[in-house]
Amino acid sequence: MKKTILLIALLMPALLLITATPAFAVSVEVATEEVLNRYDSYHEFMEFKEEGYQKIVFLTAAPLKAFKFIEIVRNDIGLPTAGNALYSLDELRPGEPFVVTWMEWGSMPHRGITFIDGNDQTRCFFISSHGGDGSLVLTEYPVVYQGVPKAYKPILDALFLLEERLRQEEYDSDEDLETVGFAEDPYPRDSALGYALADLDGDGVLELLLGSMEGLNASAPNSVFTLRDGQPVLLKSFWSRNRGIILEDGTICSVGSGGAADTYLSSFKLDKGTGALIQLTDIHSGYSQAEEKIYFVRVVNGKEHYISEQEFDDFLTMYEKSPNRMYLRIPIALQR
Image (cartoon, rainbow, N blue to C red):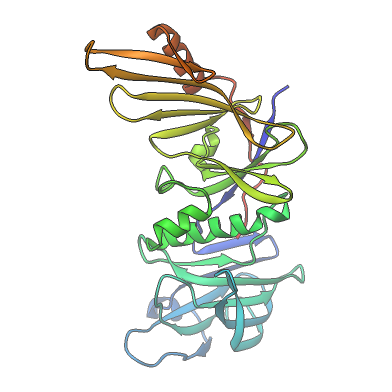
């Protein structure tokens, strides 16, 4: 029976239109004369009057109650949250848009909107511009991490912030990457980040796998966490020259390269009793200057044993091309 990884994307909000439920649709764009001339009237708030601001307009396809233009502040760990209301409307209606002056500074959002949608749910979005083309985006907060043990939430908050900073092309590589167990920028660089949940050792405790969506879809995470005594612990980190692969039985394989002749093959199992990683195989190749040839070694009980190139290639094929990788399932994209 195949194990299943629950895979969920932290989707980068690249569209101006955000439709979280059929009950509402709200968008934001630059308030050009062409756009404003489509409407007989609109609500307007002039927050900035100095040079450098631009006008933006919020449009809705359905009535939004208790609409507010707000400050976005940061909580204790740096995540965005709703601050003071700067302008309020009892209702934002279709055909009566809201126009506001807008000025972006720094990489972190500082303004947003809240409203009550058609399902009587309060929604909060912050406004930012896409690092690539400068288009405006709305990102919903708070983040809802589906089916995730509470202890993993700070790590996923950090992943959320990392994606935001990557999108803005401004981040502290050491601190931001270390928090989520990444040894380098996520690969491929332009893939959305995501997370997966899987019980790798069958003890009923879900492990957390982080990485790019492209990597996770190939069972190749950037980092793997588990819980010990209810607290998250980083098990393994992987990067472009040291790839990780998760097999369907929960085995964690590692394929690394230190140069043209130096390849390292390792596999690990999570111990059900202690939650520690136990190494199953340790195989590597290297180049002998004395013999002027590549050699292949398998380490057993701390001792090196030479193996044939065919044996080495069989292990490499098993790791890199195994058909027995964990089956990945994406039930729903995470709405932020």
